[in-house]
Amino acid sequence: KKRIFSGVQPSGDLTLGNYIGAIKNWAKLQDDYECIYCIVDLHSITVRQTPADLRRRTLEVLMQYMAAGIDPEKSVIFIQSHVSAHAELAWVLGCNAQMGELSRMTQFKEKSKKHADNINAGLFTYPVLMAADILVYQADLVPVGHDQLQHVEIARDIANRFNHYYSDTFTIPEAYIPKVGQRIMSLQSPENKMSKSDPNPNGCIRLLDDKDTIIRKFKRAVTDSGSEIKSAADKPGVTNLLSIYSAVTNKTVEEAEKDFEGKGYGEFKLAVGEAVADTLAPVQAEFCRLQGDKEYVESVYKKGAEAASYIASKTLRKVYKKVGFIAK
Ligand code: ATP
Ligand code: MG
Image (cartoon, rainbow, N blue to C red; front, side, top):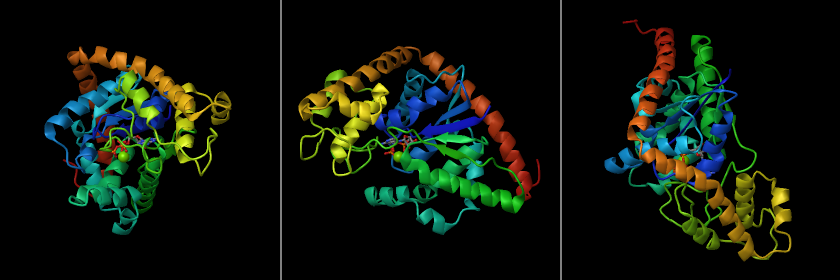
């Protein structure tokens, strides 16, 4: 079986973008691949986090993974900081990554603009740690949204470079991007992607928003001039709503456009809101159930960390040997 690795930062409550662009697909891949899913807490501190919030959110993200259908009997689910090999491999890979290539990363540029008061070194080397996450498991595929494509590319570049200099060590990973919903945009500013760290509460739908909140946010969603419900470059708001609708109903965008032929924006937005609320309802119910079962949740991430460490330490040993470190 081919191996899959992916992760989400516990940097905020999960959004519909995280769900459609990432987690929903993770669940589908479990039967055909060996899947390893991580909550990347080390990555999240590249932006200031309140410790108590981080602690709570890390477990909430874990429970949202499980509620969305990631089954701990099929997949490894764990917390990044529990497996020290990520940070250790990141050091070695950092010595094989160039300042120049890291400076070209759009996420770094965007996040340094957004957090101009804290442009820390971790924010700059974020892609190196992400390369370590992927390469330490020798992952074949990395299911991510469009925004992470550049980071998977740099992971491939670093792996190729290492393999070339030290001899074959890492599997070269490939990004796996969904056809529909690879880039869900903010409901308030459809030129920006929906992000869980967005301070504007109306821009994103949270996985745990109740039905009324979801409907209200969709009713307020920014649409475009004109009245036609069509996916088009000059209609970013409508296009985004159509791709959300098609992602949650598993219809193509063309089928979605047909559903709304001749209808007004009001009716359209309400229908999208209802489709989203219907999709999220079972996820929310399962999340609530898991919240009442702390012991089970703890057993999942402990078992996950053990399984992940076993694989990761094998790669790390091999890497240390290749670069010329003495075995202990
Ligand atoms: P942050 O604002 O803290 O960076 P985020 O919403 O961008 O949060 P990440 O933890 O950085 O979330 O990314 C987790 C996964 O979700 C990645 O695979 C990423 O590609 C995907 N993802 C994030 N935002 C979107 C989006 N708007 N549309 C589709 N996929 C997304
Ligand atoms: Mg992000």
